[in-house]
Length: 524
Image (cartoon, rainbow, N blue to C red; front, side, top):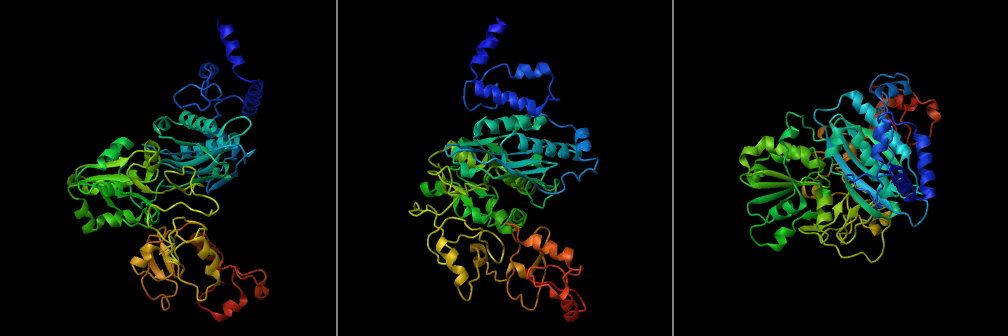
């Protein structure tokens, strides 16, 4: 009977798939984390659906070997712990093989308690490196002792669909650590192939979301109650409720939960935007007397893109004001999960800004806006405008950023092409800087503590006006250039006075003559 069953299962798999699986087994070698009996038991049942779920057995799943700590030590030639992956790691990803291919995304995060020791963090990064090489993966993943935060993509290949690959990736993580058994993996399938990341980037960090708060100030054990989208939707209609947007203001500009206020004249949740440039602004916003008075005695709902930013924010809110509130709740899975549950948008208005190649996702556009600007754009639900010409516009393109605080700005395609020709060139500012009358360029100010605190101006005599309280560093601009300047400012250029490079960071003889007190540098 058993032999007949085995033959029947083999017939369900095409010869092409059998060859692909055999080739992958040969490449991966024996799985040292599973005994042969466990491996055969796991692969005993064939899957009937082309997209397997994480709960159902899947015969096409081949576990990726998990390296041991000793194996990693040998591989990295016994380098000191913490030096194996000291910086971000980048791997090139596989590109789509044909135009009919589809891409998939998975968004997830997982906090771990107690925190992983450094040896586990290093082992996980080694395992992720193997996964990125063996499976067709792209994306961004942040790894910290407190957990993981990731946006991962895949694309259809000859051996596997993108949807199946990402679910196998999730199962690999569940095999690595039991904490991932509780993870809310948000899968988005059937996307165009240009939504696939062309590389896989892994960042070792100390915090998944940088709030500048210690575990004592915001213990995750005091986090808000997680609500499923249906329950969150109902509570948006409750009287005496405020819904706080934990995202940055530039994200909230193009989409937010305020549909309940538009539909119900009385009794609906009041929408609150903390007007943050970055997550570190949350604590200072909550410290304001006006903020605490606005929240006191209310039921507070928090939300963000995928849920991770609400974890620390809700814990800090409970720690500071828990006894003065009628409960702190957060949207499980964030806006992504809500829009999956409410295809018509529910109480959501506008677009959901995302940190992947979709750029921003609307109710009628699950593939997102990312890519070239096409003519005949659909009407904008939220009233937003270009920062230069003020015509209706709701896309963040060209990595244009506020020159006084660094956050992304909305600039239309026409102004993007014409701004370089304007004389004098206008000062590009975000709505927050305009409202707060911030006029000092970010490049003229020295920021410390990851852009949170202002210490001194690089040219105090010229830096007249108001400076932004914090600056958002993104796009590889501010930090890397300043780091290079500090690194090379004491080293002479090997080309000496003959050097003509305008972006040279090294010191030159002519500069030493001009200033004996300190070496100056060419402006980048």
